[in-house]
Length: 539
Image 1 (spheres, rainbow, N blue to C red):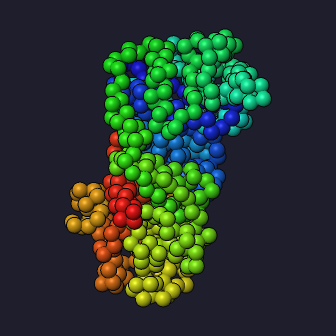
Image 2: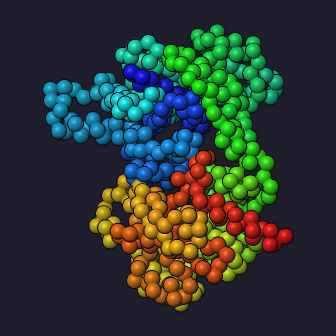
Image 3: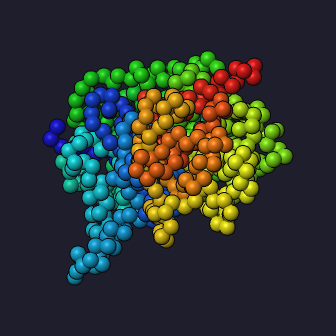
């Protein structure tokens, strides 16, 4: 193929319509047809990346192999496509402006007034086309964050207009995701919000080629025709996106609506083979026809916003399907758990995951949780801070180090069993400076982790500043907590286990980032299996 094709996905009427899921679903269908596809997300906020944002602000911060802290939609891209993303797949307004301002300071615009048009839009266009110019992809899908009409989105829409103007015909396609709300009082769907959203796009000089309409009720033929007529698109380019049981139904729904065929026709690309989605359908069948159920608690401090733990929740869906098990997840706020109520809070669960996070708030609740599951042989998985809390709990209650803590929570603790990494101590800037990205880990044969992975050397993604203090390693192993995973270069402890416990594993890395539909993460698969065995014993 001589030229890369570009698809732009915009959103209108309201946020949270699911641009990321639509983008990932279309990419999955095109990939299944034999095309080389990638997706990138352009976010309109001025932060350089979401790494310093509170999860309540933006949901989970997703981390790529190359250490980029990115929007959570990149997680959807990887989970649907089974391919890795990178720093190039997520760009923010902050990063765009930083690049342009750096160039201005270096004298690259001498004699010129630096303006949004052309300087900011030129940088946006350059970033949009970077992946396409590598020659690695037939199609690049670009999701634009925000909603059409937002002030901060205007430079991105203008950049799309310019790219379409500069490219040849049939080289670009614009998909506009919009809402067709149902008014219960009138008992009818309303198209006016969609018409106004498309009108706003036209005012900016961009004509959508395809409209994907989010709806709670089916769109009739007359309604589709009306939308097509007043939004100036072909009737077959009005795509119904009705609410579904799981986001993993969306690719099949979009296939039924022929979204991929409409796009390929517009881009003048051959259909190639029919999509082979048999493994996807098998995954969905197992997901919807489980043989057993387990109840798993996620204990964290951002539980009011489930998107804060999005990759963990999706990893449970993947691993549940693999085990033919319905995983019922309940979020528990760690601030509301203590030694007095921990039994009543946790005794109904078949497994407990203590979630990652930062800061002192809710720590003692996590430690009380871990003490209870350790003493009562309830399957446990601790991730990042969850693993560190398991180390602190074991130090206090088994090793006998009274007052042991992490130096993050208590800088004056006598026993800093979790301490800041040496290379982190001189760092002052917070953004993008943690230990980020993929690192190797050597696993001990015979351990629970080795049984899960089925191999001794793995690569996992990280996002942390603090680590297990190796000064205390011998004391821990004598008391029964083994270090079963180590970074072969830095000797950083990556995995801890309690051999006498049915399933007690803490990991410094984030296994949830690597779990996909086609490859559920082995630690989650084993954890769900252990929870199922625990549930059967209770019965």
